[in-house]
Image (cartoon, rainbow over all chains, first blue to last red; front, side, top):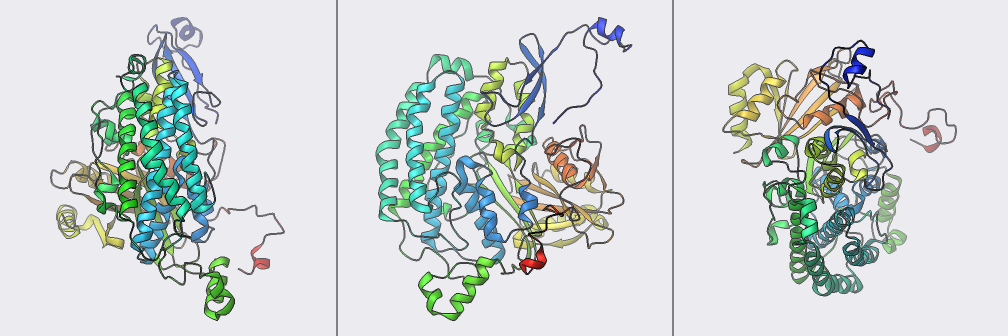
Length: 413
Length: 165
């Protein structure tokens, strides 16, 4: 990703030498907070213009992990695209998976049974906790506090074990199917989730908060660092915890409830300044709210089927495939991807770990989408990064990037 | 605020410049031309009743069969106060895929338009920094266009004829 530009003279002597007009006698240093840097999570390049210690402006290069998902999606049957969505925000893949499933269910007009919706809510909230654990603990690491990260990551390991129990994979989960889930929550999974949200996670989160929330050093590093006003954030298209830290309480789960979120009672933590400290506190608050939601979902988990009876899109049970002709044909057609989707156009959004993850799907009646576009929150709010860094030092720039929770997979898709 | 109110407001304001109102999955969609798009976006942004102050997304789509309107630029807007979304489409001919930029109204349109340019080659006039964003600068084709194949065309083993499609 090379930048080609004619060099602009930064000092009077250079301007004289290069025969350029003398603008201002100011020397800016160009610093490359380069693609491979231990403090940037993922691969981002920022070419910063520094005035001594302070950042004046920055130019970003993104696209190091661009994998052409939107092009690949035009060639894949619908259920194979779930694996692409895993790899966007890979810290909270179930949310992307279910967002995609709900988009297609909207297009096909499938009604998901209540039990499956509650299970989806549980898994999505676990994913949100997992995402916020990474963001907040890595913000701690970037400001120098490594021990918080270690203790909290054990909880993330437990979440991985729950994923493994539910779908077989730890990180890129490919969870759920069109019309519900692929299998019911096993007793082991329910026991593990209960142990997590009732026993271990609240204690660990409390300890984590005790370490950071009123810690003098942490607050000095994060309060008033990288502020953004609510109005400016909305102009940029911010969503998610970054927007809520700036004071605007927009949450897709409340504004346009999906998958039975309207059955649950939870609050939305909102900040004041939109600085790094507020983003940290909002994410902490959201983890507590997610614990509340999971407890409510577990207590009220309804009985019933865990998938909708959609023969065309949901694989029939295997013993039926061996005995029943129709089941055999449906199994063959689904696996070979020969099922045509109806013509239509749908935009569906879910509340991901970073904000509104949108799926814009245009179907022309074939077996693959005609156009699939992912509205990726990271891509949209990362535009504001140079503006937020202005006037700060490099250590502030690093803290701001951590607190924004920029995930490379979601940025580039 | 229902979709019907939105339609009467927008048609009342712009009349001939907007067309093709539809509601796929309940989301009001309409089409306009590149000459009117900035006016319409400004109106939707600053109108005291409609309050479409949030730009959700800007994408490009390529319809190779739609002669005279091969490239579409699709705007998704959202009004937080009214809790309603809207979708605007502008169709551009392939000989001249130019459209005025929306960055004057929504700052966040900057990278979204760069992505549409990178993938489809749609030129956003007045954009402050219209360069490729996700692909390398040296690329000289636009990869999301339908004529550009996904897979390596010189492969002999995975051709459609053998795979029965």
